[in-house]
Image (cartoon, rainbow, N blue to C red):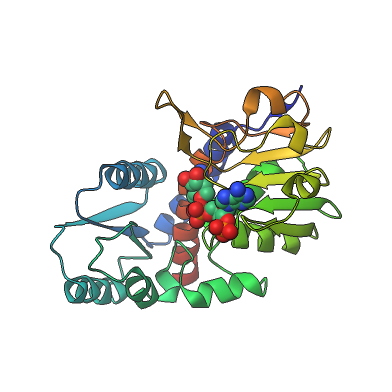
Length: 281
Ligand code: NAP
């Protein structure tokens, strides 16, 4: 039976560390601030933004919320970002996605000062991640690396298979595993013989977005299985990409959903915000 990797436990430990770092900055007279922009009335986005604000409060970071109407123009949003880029109280700028259809997400994300891009979505920061020399961590993959470290799971020399090649999860995940000397393979919807690939994995990361996609017959005995998926099953319950009940019998370690990768993502966003303030210091 697999040992459960608890994102809640790792996240709580990390937030304690961040609290201390924010306190140390405050003692030097340096404040830490995160600007959160939300455009429109997407209810899921509102939940995410509230959780990010709560996370800031917990570790002593000031959050500045900009809740804009659905009708906000791209030009108006760029004007706000320009102000925040030049505001010394703001160490990180986060623009909650998705944006309304009339706003080009790429234009907006590329306009955020790379030095305040705590989501690490700006091409400059993506480039830094690619060359393995970065300040801002890609939040979800970095949260996974933090969990592996916490549970003393070494990546070096391991065969790592990542299912999914998105810019937010799959690709940066592969880069972080590679940086830790894993032998990394990325699979996607066009991968031939996916099962053959996943069966070779010592560490398997599923970032597909399909409930119950990874079944026990796709997993090597003793593998570490990380489930990034956040899906709703037929009953509307939150579930991952992995058939947890059957895979936990075969894996050595496994992340549950909820309570696995999810809690780590916001924590790593907070880590990036604190890093930005430390760089300013
Ligand atoms: P995405 O952009 O939709 O990417 C999904 C990836 O899965 C794509 O690369 C796609 O391949 C691949 N895929 C789809 N069907 C496949 C199949 N049959 N076989 C193999 N690969 C297949 O999604 P994402 O943004 O990376 O997110 C993935 C999941 O993680 C979602 O459930 C999302 O909600 C969740 N998520 C969770 C967190 C968190 O904090 N816990 C953060 C981000 C995302 P192609 O490229 O070929 O289409």
